[in-house]
Image (cartoon, rainbow, N blue to C red; front, top):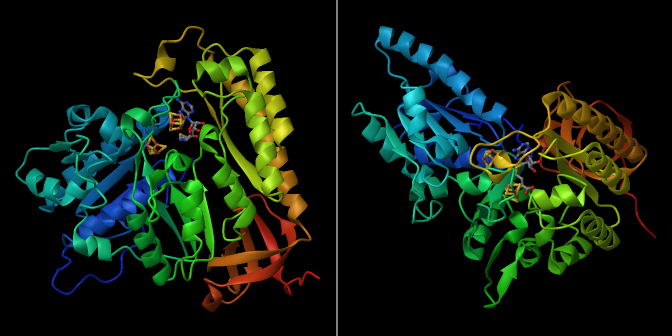
Length: 472
Ligand code: SAH
Ligand code: SF4
Ligand code: F3S
């Protein structure tokens, strides 16, 4: 998952008449797509409690930071933001205006009480498993004492959203995220997620199908199923069998109105045959797979507790490509894990050469207190990490550029998503998750049209409308 996602949560539509929207909340999202989804749901929970979402901090009566703990820098950002908010709260108090501050997400879960000790301006700290209790926590915090809610709730946060918030699950565009699985039991030795998100939990088929249908009914054409380990999703299907993610995708592909499905993030260990078959059979399932490998050296993979070898990963990619030859592969990499030698790093470069990634995210190893990796010997110096990252990123960038160039001349289906920067232009999404600019009308947003790719830019492609190619 890409932790750089920071998408403002768009304002929900008008609230039911009986709830007078008097207060405003500004939600800032850090971290992965899961947090983006959670921010939307928190907005929904607050909407049913009379809060309107705003995109201007100055208007807000409540500022909520939905935080990420994955790397040290991510967590540091939260404390510097809280410093600025403390000053804002003071200035507001001088004007006699209230400002409440909430910290949600993975830093909230990992640091709990510590946050109010370090940042006393914070009113509410709420972990990712408990955000349905947010309205209640805010009420209690008005009593003057900060409220910290980071227990793993026994009740299901999805089931405990107020009815109005459930009804509020609706379109905010033509693409949407849908969380199907949360938490992680893998315990990679570098990673905080098993501690911040708890153990693996799958939502039921009925919940997922109902939410997918609601999204499709409100105009969503493409749904991305989310989970920290999305392909570890398992639940009983309507036929009484235990379904895996592949089964779920076959089922969701039938959703009226829905044109595209994606899922992220997958673990190589959980790519089962059914999921690979889904890539072979379902045109609705987009030919794009984010399959992080982290490193190419078996010694490092073992120390990371990834529980597969480089050869197993390569073989898996081969099987997936045999099932869906046009699939674009994306990955995550960590350089400078403790004990990584130049030879180990060369193995990572070799693996990258062998796979050929269409997209990738790569990071310097960041020591996370409490994870087993933190206690390993032979930590790699920052200089060496930086230098390896630079070499890896140069190779990944070249592969990404090569992939983009290979698209030029192709006619593809483009899902028109939002207005472009220039009038008369619309930005769409290719099957391979690329942003594509094309001349089109904004009234066509939501349509899937054939376009011919005519050029590449730094982060996007350019296209012209095309006739659909009819295969004979
Ligand atoms: N569940 C996903 C990953 C979630 S975290 C998976 O298993 O692939 C997203 C990415 O952040 C990881 O894939 C990894 O590349 C990176 N990451 C996680 N912990 C890190 C750490 N301590 N230092 C550097 N990068 C890290
Ligand atoms: Fe973290 Fe590993 Fe779980 Fe992914 S699989 S969330 S990297 S522990
Ligand atoms: Fe960050 Fe938590 Fe996601 S640590 S990457 S926001 S699961």
